[in-house]
Each structure stands twice: as C-alpha cells, then as structure tokens.
Amino acid sequence: MSDRILRKALYKEFQEAMEAVTDICALIRRMLSSSAQDDYTNLDYLVTGGIIDPETGKDMKSANGLKNRLVHEYDGVNDRIAYAAMQRLVPRLHRFSEEVLVWLDADRI
Image (cartoon, rainbow, N blue to C red):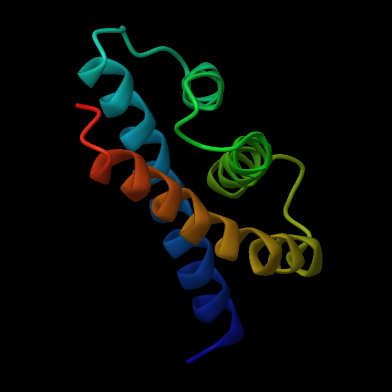
C-alpha cells in the first residue's frame, strides 16, 4: 500500500468520525426540542447545556475545522501538521463520546 493511499485512508476515517460528532450534536439539539443549527453553534449548545465540557467543545471545533480542510483541501494540506493535529484530537473525540454517554445515562431525555 502506498503512503498516499494510507494518508487518504487516515484522512477519510477522521472525516467520518467528525461527521458522526456533528450529527450527534444536531440530534441532541433536536431531542431537546431545539432546532439544529450549524456545526459550531450546535457544539456551543452542548457546552452551554453542560452536555460536554468547554475544553471538549473547543477541541471539537478544531477537529471540525481540520475535517473541513481535509475535505476541501484548502490551500493544500500539510501532512505533518494534519497528522500531528489528528494525533492530538483523536483522544478528544473519545472524550466527546464519553461525555455524551454520561449525559445519556443520566436519563436526561
């Protein structure tokens, strides 16, 4: 397998993980009788509602920005920077899911 194929596969996996995060944010807003907005506003809503902590919200916004850059390849992508950012952000994706699961387990819906 070439480095290019592996790189594109990593980018695609990251993109799909972030799409799941933003879909979950929109679904939670709708569950709480609020209309879903753009990805960044939905993340703010979860932070304001105490569903995720502010640091997680900030990291998810960074991850969403990286996803957008990877999808659209704005100005090209610096692979070293993208990979370093993914290494930092993937654990935060896990933290997002943990925080949402805690909120769901609290029978708030």
